[in-house]
Length: 89
Image (cartoon, rainbow, N blue to C red):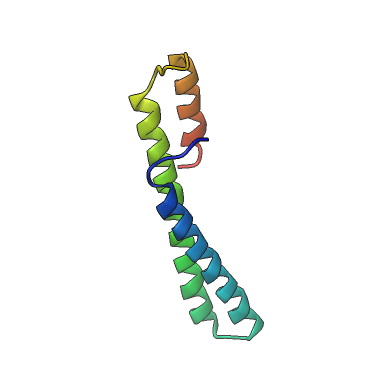
């Protein structure tokens, strides 16, 4: 199982964002003013973006600190993982 110390906080943030997204959908269904909907949607977007940044940062920290680990991964494998995740920045 692959986890980082920050995963519980990221999960909590994403669950909250999911709840907010459901609220945004309900707001649209109820015909709420666009400004209110967009404000809430912006909050959802920021929460998801922050969760993504945290996950990427954790991965990079782990990847760079453990270029070669006990499982025999090579530096090339770690570098390949680094390259793959940076496309999400």
